[in-house]
Length: 112
Length: 117
Image 1 (tube, each protein chain N blue to C red):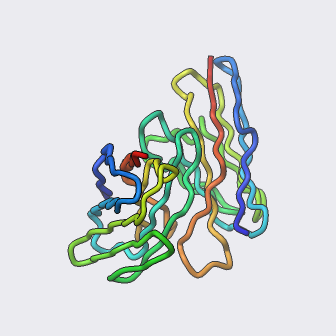
Image 2 (tube, rainbow over the protein chains, first blue to last red; image 1 turned 90 degrees about the vertical axis):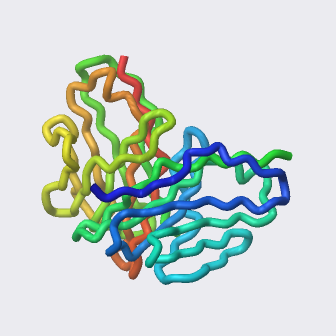
């Protein structure tokens, strides 16, 4: 059973702080990793993708990947109340269909 | 770019009826679309992989005769929930992968909230 694990939270940070979201995955052969943001009642929207070890930055967001440790993280700098949402970590499987396996999500609350 | 639409956005039906949900990629072609289901406060669970021109691949535990999938073109996949029951009430979300894309990025539709009375 391929798994993606996340702490369900809620993770509460003050406005302007750095929010750190973590994810581990079980399939060592995984190559593609994604972070999605989901507001309540809405579908997921893509925040970041990462494929290589190291950091990838996009605006206030930084994704970090460590394949040896099977660990992916997302840092949100200068957190805003509008960042309050559930963040889903997703990993592409190694089967031909290349489907996404999602973690259960971490709920982030940014306190004004 | 990379817009995926779903229709309807919300549907309420009586138990025993069938409901069809459409998923369209509006500005790209998709040989593969995915259907997910999400229960309240739970994560997305893959139901099936929809392949243009061939049969869908269903996940373990998903009844293929109850959740009929048709991928008639490179921009349209449909999910039909047959003989719906209250336990089928859920948020159904489709996603599509760009045929021309070099990555595994999937773009999600806005979802369809199904309530079966």
